[in-house]
Length: 223
Length: 164
Image (tube, each protein chain N blue to C red):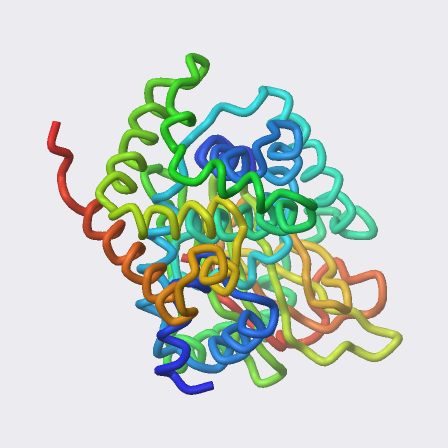
């Protein structure tokens, strides 16, 4: 399907008024073509403006947060991590920090989506969207400062059966475990990363490590 | 998540309710949509829309799917088309919601009846462009053009300062 044909369908797409076949064709086209980003954003702004606020029952809020907590808990580390174990990480594994910084530098130079900030409309909340970079693959990091939640989505080959990916918060003076990343690459962690400089991913033995034992394979900065 | 919900819960519920017309079903859609937003957070792409519009896209697709699964819904959609005013007089709504709704009304009211009907039938009624063409007895190309013109017009109207 050509870009002109996509442009003809974009309004109907934004209104969810396409049949399954055309919807699939537009989705496929948009997955690899960024020429329509601006028009799509404008159409979505217009469709979003068709909505009017309405007060749901107070129970919805508590129900949603309960469901969210249950889902987030299912993704937490498999075993508790002793924070005290990380206090001397910077001294014990300076190579980890240096390697993280090196990957970070490559990422800053090479990625256009770096440090993209999604400013929420009409509010004080914001979320920070960063890209993971490294030779092993790629991924996204979204950090919600108000909720102190970091969401990672990695596109990496699964580690071998004896290893796992582990996420780390890299701070000026220490590196803290955020938790393990399941093999599907999606994980969420609750941690205050407001003073972190980066989130790094390393390959660790099954069950994770108290401190990084290998150099990071991916790094994303945290503004 | 609490902060996100506090900011966007009402607009998400307003949209879901407007489409499905049943409060309990609308709340289920809102809850699932927020969880979907959480699960699909990696798909957020600021160049293709804000977080608000992305969330509302999720809400709308779920609501439309629910509507399309119902038999007989499309018949009632025709009867409801153009009857947006019925949505404006709920005393339980907050003043902010009323202002918000006024803005929507203002935008829709600026559309010609053909364009307003196109939005009503598709965005709120769940018809596809092809079904809109069939219902309105117009060529498919015309139906798609109406949707495009309607969104263009809405965007311009909403960008203008209120007359009041």
